Image (cartoon, rainbow, N blue to C red; front, side, top):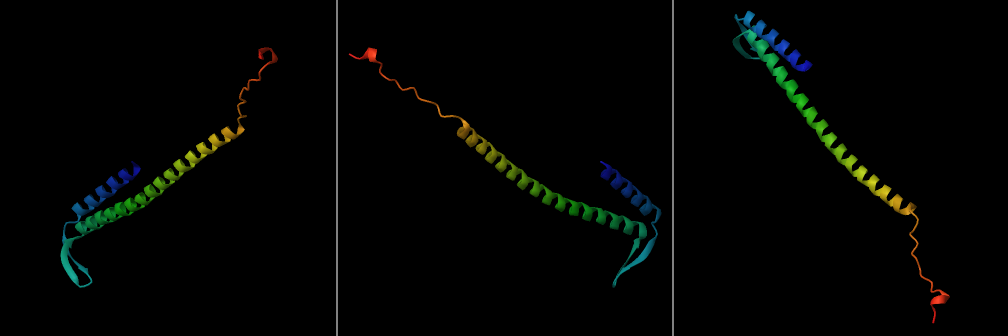
Length: 110
């Protein structure tokens, strides 16, 4: 939210600057020249910078999301292994159930 506030303030300042400087000036870049107002040039450079910043941030965010998905999958795998190991430990720690064997008593013999 704070980032959005800074962007709005930055764009508002650029728009005010562009509206204040409307006189056409010759602009040269290496051997290319054209007539453009300084305010329009500043506004164009500011918007291009914002777009570049958004794209750079978006690429970094995609990398972070990819790492987070891989980490979550790894955590799920480790949790399932932990549950399996707890089950195996419980099976090993429980004493075997004694089966009742019937021994014929001497009274029942004929």
